[in-house]
Image (cartoon, rainbow, N blue to C red; front, side):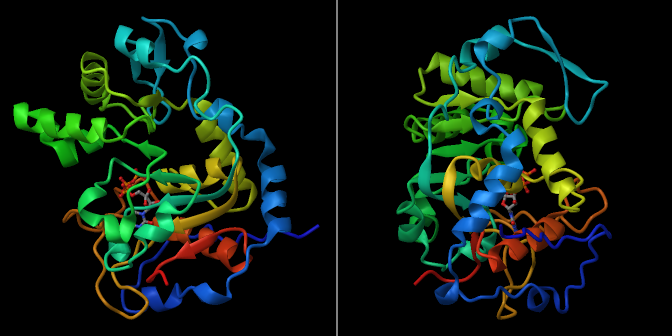
Length: 318
Ligand code: CTP
Protein backbone atom coordinates (compact mmCIF):
# COMPACT_ATOMS: atom_id res chain seq x y z
CA UNK A 1 0.00 0.00 0.00
CA UNK A 2 0.92 3.64 -0.13
CA UNK A 3 3.34 4.78 2.50
CA UNK A 4 2.44 7.68 4.70
CA UNK A 5 5.34 10.00 5.27
CA UNK A 6 4.49 12.78 7.63
CA UNK A 7 7.32 15.18 7.56
CA UNK A 8 7.44 16.75 10.99
CA UNK A 9 10.57 17.59 12.90
CA UNK A 10 11.12 17.29 16.61
CA UNK A 11 13.28 20.37 16.85
CA UNK A 12 11.59 23.39 18.38
CA UNK A 13 9.86 25.48 15.79
CA UNK A 14 12.04 28.50 15.16
CA UNK A 15 10.10 31.24 13.49
CA UNK A 16 12.06 33.34 11.07
CA UNK A 17 9.54 35.94 10.07
CA UNK A 18 11.51 37.02 7.00
CA UNK A 19 10.94 33.89 4.98
CA UNK A 20 8.39 31.95 6.98
CA UNK A 21 5.60 32.20 4.45
CA UNK A 22 7.87 31.40 1.52
CA UNK A 23 9.10 28.29 3.29
CA UNK A 24 5.52 27.17 3.70
CA UNK A 25 4.39 27.71 0.16
CA UNK A 26 1.73 25.21 -0.68
CA UNK A 27 2.39 22.81 -3.54
CA UNK A 28 0.70 21.54 -5.59
CA UNK A 29 -1.47 24.52 -6.31
CA UNK A 30 -5.18 24.23 -5.75
CA UNK A 31 -6.04 23.33 -9.34
CA UNK A 32 -3.43 20.54 -9.51
CA UNK A 33 -4.24 18.89 -6.19
CA UNK A 34 -5.72 15.39 -6.42
CA UNK A 35 -7.31 13.39 -3.65
CA UNK A 36 -5.30 10.27 -2.84
CA UNK A 37 -7.95 7.72 -1.92
CA UNK A 38 -5.44 4.96 -1.10
CA UNK A 39 -3.64 7.20 1.31
CA UNK A 40 -6.84 8.41 2.97
CA UNK A 41 -7.90 4.82 3.55
CA UNK A 42 -4.50 3.99 4.93
CA UNK A 43 -4.70 6.90 7.36
CA UNK A 44 -8.00 5.49 8.53
CA UNK A 45 -6.36 2.14 9.25
CA UNK A 46 -3.48 3.70 11.15
CA UNK A 47 -5.97 5.57 13.21
CA UNK A 48 -8.12 2.62 14.10
CA UNK A 49 -7.41 3.02 17.81
CA UNK A 50 -9.13 6.37 17.51
CA UNK A 51 -12.86 5.89 17.67
CA UNK A 52 -14.57 9.11 16.60
CA UNK A 53 -17.96 7.92 17.76
CA UNK A 54 -16.70 7.17 21.25
CA UNK A 55 -13.97 9.73 21.58
CA UNK A 56 -15.95 12.80 20.60
CA UNK A 57 -17.71 12.83 23.96
CA UNK A 58 -18.11 11.20 27.31
CA UNK A 59 -21.57 9.60 27.43
CA UNK A 60 -24.15 9.84 30.17
CA UNK A 61 -23.86 6.26 31.32
CA UNK A 62 -20.18 6.61 32.20
CA UNK A 63 -20.37 9.48 34.71
CA UNK A 64 -22.71 10.64 37.42
CA UNK A 65 -23.14 13.98 39.21
CA UNK A 66 -20.47 14.47 41.86
CA UNK A 67 -17.86 12.31 40.13
CA UNK A 68 -14.35 13.69 40.37
CA UNK A 69 -12.36 14.25 37.19
CA UNK A 70 -8.66 15.02 36.92
CA UNK A 71 -7.89 17.59 34.25
CA UNK A 72 -6.06 16.11 31.34
CA UNK A 73 -3.27 18.68 31.26
CA UNK A 74 -3.29 19.50 34.98
CA UNK A 75 -3.47 16.08 36.55
CA UNK A 76 -3.23 17.46 40.09
CA UNK A 77 -6.34 19.59 39.71
CA UNK A 78 -9.79 18.11 39.81
CA UNK A 79 -13.34 19.09 39.11
CA UNK A 80 -16.70 17.66 40.04
CA UNK A 81 -19.29 16.66 37.51
CA UNK A 82 -22.12 19.10 38.13
CA UNK A 83 -25.80 18.30 37.77
CA UNK A 84 -25.98 20.58 34.71
CA UNK A 85 -23.00 19.01 33.02
CA UNK A 86 -24.51 15.62 33.67
CA UNK A 87 -27.82 16.72 32.14
CA UNK A 88 -26.02 17.82 29.00
CA UNK A 89 -23.90 14.71 28.46
CA UNK A 90 -25.17 12.95 25.33
CA UNK A 91 -26.92 9.61 25.76
CA UNK A 92 -25.65 8.38 22.43
CA UNK A 93 -22.74 9.65 20.43
CA UNK A 94 -23.58 12.60 18.18
CA UNK A 95 -21.43 10.89 15.55
CA UNK A 96 -23.13 7.53 15.78
CA UNK A 97 -23.11 5.86 12.36
CA UNK A 98 -22.08 9.12 10.72
CA UNK A 99 -19.94 9.04 7.59
CA UNK A 100 -19.46 11.88 5.16
CA UNK A 101 -18.09 12.17 1.65
CA UNK A 102 -16.36 15.49 2.14
CA UNK A 103 -15.76 17.54 5.26
CA UNK A 104 -14.46 21.03 5.80
CA UNK A 105 -12.47 22.01 8.85
CA UNK A 106 -12.32 25.74 9.24
CA UNK A 107 -9.43 27.15 11.28
CA UNK A 108 -9.50 30.75 12.39
CA UNK A 109 -6.55 32.32 10.56
CA UNK A 110 -6.97 35.74 8.96
CA UNK A 111 -5.89 34.10 5.71
CA UNK A 112 -9.63 33.49 5.19
CA UNK A 113 -10.32 37.20 4.76
CA UNK A 114 -11.00 38.01 1.09
CA UNK A 115 -10.69 34.32 0.23
CA UNK A 116 -14.23 34.11 -1.12
CA UNK A 117 -14.30 30.52 0.22
CA UNK A 118 -17.74 30.74 1.84
CA UNK A 119 -19.66 28.91 -0.87
CA UNK A 120 -17.06 26.22 -1.27
CA UNK A 121 -16.97 25.61 2.49
CA UNK A 122 -20.75 25.43 2.72
CA UNK A 123 -20.86 22.86 -0.09
CA UNK A 124 -19.16 20.20 2.07
CA UNK A 125 -21.39 17.60 3.72
CA UNK A 126 -20.01 18.26 7.19
CA UNK A 127 -18.48 21.55 8.34
CA UNK A 128 -16.42 21.85 11.51
CA UNK A 129 -15.58 25.25 12.99
CA UNK A 130 -13.47 26.30 15.95
CA UNK A 131 -14.05 28.31 19.09
CA UNK A 132 -17.44 29.78 18.24
CA UNK A 133 -15.86 31.97 15.57
CA UNK A 134 -18.42 34.38 14.10
CA UNK A 135 -19.76 33.55 10.64
CA UNK A 136 -22.62 35.90 9.79
CA UNK A 137 -20.51 39.00 9.11
CA UNK A 138 -17.89 36.96 7.23
CA UNK A 139 -20.14 34.60 5.30
CA UNK A 140 -18.59 35.40 1.91
CA UNK A 141 -15.19 34.21 3.10
CA UNK A 142 -16.01 31.57 5.69
CA UNK A 143 -19.54 30.36 4.88
CA UNK A 144 -22.38 29.75 7.31
CA UNK A 145 -22.94 26.00 7.52
CA UNK A 146 -21.89 24.60 10.88
CA UNK A 147 -22.32 20.97 11.83
CA UNK A 148 -19.88 21.02 14.71
CA UNK A 149 -18.31 23.93 16.50
CA UNK A 150 -15.78 23.78 19.31
CA UNK A 151 -15.66 26.06 22.32
CA UNK A 152 -12.63 26.32 24.57
CA UNK A 153 -13.78 27.74 27.91
CA UNK A 154 -11.37 30.66 27.33
CA UNK A 155 -13.61 31.84 24.47
CA UNK A 156 -16.11 33.06 27.04
CA UNK A 157 -13.45 35.38 28.39
CA UNK A 158 -11.89 36.39 25.08
CA UNK A 159 -15.00 36.90 22.98
CA UNK A 160 -17.79 37.38 25.50
CA UNK A 161 -16.19 39.49 28.27
CA UNK A 162 -16.76 36.74 30.82
CA UNK A 163 -20.49 37.55 30.63
CA UNK A 164 -20.02 40.58 32.90
CA UNK A 165 -23.43 41.99 32.08
CA UNK A 166 -26.75 41.19 30.43
CA UNK A 167 -25.59 42.44 27.03
CA UNK A 168 -22.76 39.90 26.84
CA UNK A 169 -24.97 37.12 28.15
CA UNK A 170 -27.48 37.96 25.44
CA UNK A 171 -24.74 37.98 22.80
CA UNK A 172 -23.60 34.51 23.79
CA UNK A 173 -27.16 33.28 23.95
CA UNK A 174 -27.82 34.54 20.41
CA UNK A 175 -24.67 32.83 19.15
CA UNK A 176 -25.74 29.58 20.80
CA UNK A 177 -29.26 29.82 19.40
CA UNK A 178 -27.81 30.36 15.94
CA UNK A 179 -26.16 26.94 16.14
CA UNK A 180 -29.53 25.48 15.48
CA UNK A 181 -29.08 21.84 16.38
CA UNK A 182 -25.41 21.47 15.55
CA UNK A 183 -22.86 19.85 17.82
CA UNK A 184 -21.24 22.11 20.41
CA UNK A 185 -17.97 20.52 21.44
CA UNK A 186 -16.65 21.76 24.78
CA UNK A 187 -13.29 20.50 26.06
CA UNK A 188 -14.33 20.87 29.69
CA UNK A 189 -11.85 18.38 31.10
CA UNK A 190 -8.67 19.54 29.37
CA UNK A 191 -7.22 22.31 31.51
CA UNK A 192 -8.10 23.82 34.87
CA UNK A 193 -9.35 27.36 35.01
CA UNK A 194 -12.37 27.05 32.78
CA UNK A 195 -14.78 25.45 35.21
CA UNK A 196 -17.00 28.46 35.87
CA UNK A 197 -17.12 29.36 32.21
CA UNK A 198 -18.25 25.89 31.24
CA UNK A 199 -20.86 26.06 34.00
CA UNK A 200 -22.22 29.40 32.75
CA UNK A 201 -22.60 28.00 29.25
CA UNK A 202 -24.25 24.83 30.50
CA UNK A 203 -26.67 26.87 32.59
CA UNK A 204 -27.54 29.12 29.69
CA UNK A 205 -28.21 26.17 27.38
CA UNK A 206 -30.50 24.47 29.88
CA UNK A 207 -32.30 27.58 31.05
CA UNK A 208 -33.10 28.80 27.54
CA UNK A 209 -33.62 25.38 25.96
CA UNK A 210 -30.94 26.10 23.39
CA UNK A 211 -31.08 23.63 20.54
CA UNK A 212 -27.51 22.28 20.46
CA UNK A 213 -26.09 18.80 20.87
CA UNK A 214 -23.39 19.19 23.50
CA UNK A 215 -20.29 17.01 23.53
CA UNK A 216 -17.48 16.89 26.11
CA UNK A 217 -14.38 15.02 24.96
CA UNK A 218 -12.65 12.55 27.23
CA UNK A 219 -9.04 11.80 27.95
CA UNK A 220 -9.18 9.04 25.35
CA UNK A 221 -9.34 11.46 22.47
CA UNK A 222 -6.23 13.27 23.52
CA UNK A 223 -4.27 10.08 24.12
CA UNK A 224 -5.29 8.74 20.75
CA UNK A 225 -4.47 11.93 18.86
CA UNK A 226 -1.16 12.46 20.61
CA UNK A 227 -0.19 8.84 20.21
CA UNK A 228 -1.01 8.96 16.55
CA UNK A 229 1.14 11.98 15.80
CA UNK A 230 3.98 10.69 17.97
CA UNK A 231 3.99 7.46 15.98
CA UNK A 232 4.58 9.67 12.99
CA UNK A 233 7.43 11.44 14.75
CA UNK A 234 5.60 14.70 15.03
CA UNK A 235 6.25 15.88 18.57
CA UNK A 236 3.25 17.93 19.38
CA UNK A 237 3.21 19.54 22.81
CA UNK A 238 -0.49 20.07 23.00
CA UNK A 239 -2.49 19.54 19.84
CA UNK A 240 -4.48 22.56 18.76
CA UNK A 241 -8.22 22.38 18.37
CA UNK A 242 -7.68 22.39 14.61
CA UNK A 243 -5.42 19.35 14.71
CA UNK A 244 -7.75 17.49 17.07
CA UNK A 245 -10.60 18.13 14.64
CA UNK A 246 -8.59 17.01 11.62
CA UNK A 247 -7.47 13.83 13.36
CA UNK A 248 -10.99 13.05 14.51
CA UNK A 249 -12.39 13.76 11.05
CA UNK A 250 -10.12 11.17 9.43
CA UNK A 251 -12.36 8.59 11.07
CA UNK A 252 -15.69 9.73 9.65
CA UNK A 253 -14.89 11.77 6.54
CA UNK A 254 -13.70 10.44 3.23
CA UNK A 255 -12.14 13.64 1.89
CA UNK A 256 -10.98 16.40 4.21
CA UNK A 257 -10.53 20.05 3.23
CA UNK A 258 -8.86 22.53 5.56
CA UNK A 259 -9.41 26.28 5.42
CA UNK A 260 -8.05 28.99 7.70
CA UNK A 261 -4.98 27.04 8.77
CA UNK A 262 -2.09 29.47 8.47
CA UNK A 263 -0.16 30.25 11.64
CA UNK A 264 2.12 32.80 10.02
CA UNK A 265 2.08 36.59 9.95
CA UNK A 266 2.60 36.88 6.19
CA UNK A 267 0.70 35.16 3.41
CA UNK A 268 2.26 33.49 0.38
CA UNK A 269 2.49 36.86 -1.35
CA UNK A 270 4.15 38.46 1.67
CA UNK A 271 1.06 40.38 2.72
CA UNK A 272 0.26 40.63 6.44
CA UNK A 273 -2.24 38.08 7.80
CA UNK A 274 -4.25 38.51 10.99
CA UNK A 275 -4.00 35.77 13.58
CA UNK A 276 -7.79 35.48 13.66
CA UNK A 277 -10.06 36.58 10.85
CA UNK A 278 -12.50 38.16 13.31
CA UNK A 279 -10.58 39.86 16.12
CA UNK A 280 -7.34 41.64 16.91
CA UNK A 281 -5.65 38.88 18.87
CA UNK A 282 -1.91 38.82 18.18
CA UNK A 283 0.25 35.87 17.23
CA UNK A 284 1.09 33.88 20.30
CA UNK A 285 2.39 30.71 18.77
CA UNK A 286 6.02 31.85 18.82
CA UNK A 287 6.11 32.53 22.52
CA UNK A 288 7.52 29.96 24.89
CA UNK A 289 4.40 30.28 26.99
CA UNK A 290 2.15 29.01 24.23
CA UNK A 291 1.31 25.38 24.75
CA UNK A 292 0.97 24.84 21.01
CA UNK A 293 3.41 24.13 18.23
CA UNK A 294 1.28 25.41 15.39
CA UNK A 295 4.00 25.79 12.76
CA UNK A 296 5.08 22.21 13.44
CA UNK A 297 1.51 21.01 13.04
CA UNK A 298 1.24 23.01 9.87
CA UNK A 299 4.32 21.33 8.45
CA UNK A 300 2.78 17.92 9.09
CA UNK A 301 -0.53 18.96 7.51
CA UNK A 302 1.29 20.44 4.54
CA UNK A 303 3.09 17.18 3.97
CA UNK A 304 -0.26 15.35 3.98
CA UNK A 305 -1.59 17.92 1.52
CA UNK A 306 1.31 17.25 -0.83
CA UNK A 307 0.50 13.55 -0.73
CA UNK A 308 -3.18 14.10 -1.37
CA UNK A 309 -4.48 12.88 2.00
CA UNK A 310 -6.08 16.26 2.72
CA UNK A 311 -6.41 19.55 0.94
CA UNK A 312 -5.19 22.80 2.45
CA UNK A 313 -6.56 26.02 1.04
CA UNK A 314 -4.51 29.04 2.06
CA UNK A 315 -5.44 31.49 -0.65
CA UNK A 316 -8.54 32.35 -2.60
CA UNK A 317 -11.17 29.87 -3.64
CA UNK A 318 -12.01 29.72 -7.36
N1 CTP B 1 -5.21 28.17 13.24
C1 CTP B 1 -4.18 28.30 12.31
N2 CTP B 1 -3.62 29.51 12.08
C2 CTP B 1 -4.03 30.61 12.75
C3 CTP B 1 -5.06 30.49 13.70
C4 CTP B 1 -5.64 29.26 13.93
O1 CTP B 1 -3.79 27.30 11.72
N3 CTP B 1 -3.46 31.79 12.48
C5 CTP B 1 -5.88 26.86 13.44
C6 CTP B 1 -5.32 26.09 14.64
O2 CTP B 1 -5.33 24.71 14.31
C7 CTP B 1 -6.36 26.38 15.71
C8 CTP B 1 -7.65 26.51 14.93
O3 CTP B 1 -7.25 27.09 13.68
O4 CTP B 1 -6.49 25.35 16.66
C9 CTP B 1 -8.68 27.37 15.63
O5 CTP B 1 -8.12 28.63 15.89
P1 CTP B 1 -8.23 29.34 17.30
O6 CTP B 1 -9.62 29.48 17.69
O7 CTP B 1 -7.37 30.55 17.24
O8 CTP B 1 -7.51 28.31 18.26
P2 CTP B 1 -6.66 28.77 19.54
O9 CTP B 1 -7.59 29.26 20.57
O10 CTP B 1 -5.53 29.66 19.16
O11 CTP B 1 -5.98 27.46 19.97
P3 CTP B 1 -6.68 26.19 20.58
O12 CTP B 1 -8.16 26.34 20.54
O13 CTP B 1 -6.20 25.12 19.69
O14 CTP B 1 -6.13 26.12 21.96
